[in-house]
Length: 319
Image (cartoon, rainbow, N blue to C red; front, side):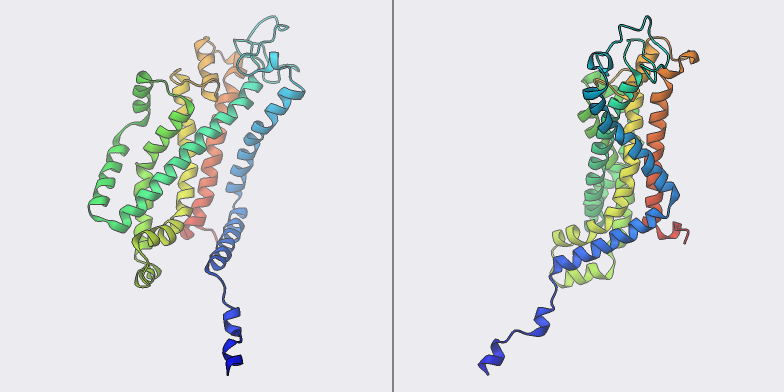
């Protein structure tokens, strides 16, 4: 009898740890979503454009250290003394020409890409973290918490972002990190919170939430382990749109010379305007590369967002 009691149960050996089950489900969900995304040509075009501009971040330092002379091609302090006049048109030495200050336009364009990605991603992460947290808390607890955050969201939505940023730029220097945090805060407290909270309300009433509550799960456990994970697909969707908003806002503020940033696409357009070449279409290389890059990168994140929207919202799927 003692031998029977001490022998291991074959059923117990087949038990799978909970973390492995969750990991398996996560991998299955990722594979399914990637398969759906790969069948969406709009999303693939967006990813291709994003990767094209992201490659600038990697290629530019390599060119500066190997092919380009830092004295001539430095995006901030560079100057070509061999060119008799500036702005110079595109040539073999300067593929996109030079600006009125004698700096290489292609070098500025590639170097500024890093600033655009950092600004967009930081602002988007702050937006998603705030909106997802507030949306989950408001939907789960309701009452005074929900009323406070929803009224705050209404106020933020009514405020014109650009006007607020212009006023802030008059009060203190707006650097890239500060701008990213402000845009993330405004985005997280605004419309994204309302949308994510609406999705959290549908999750709150599902049977597995009630089962978790009956099983003894606390409020924090339910919110963190059941509600927020199911909000992440929608949060990631709005992250793409938050990147768009951040890049566009930076371009507008830099165009008016209101940001304390060494170099950006918006600042390239500002330099062109300040030098009096904004409406001189014969000097197309001064405004065309930066303006097209802003439009293309914003469009790319929008296309990725559209593709993700079809994954998050099954009713939009074409199959």
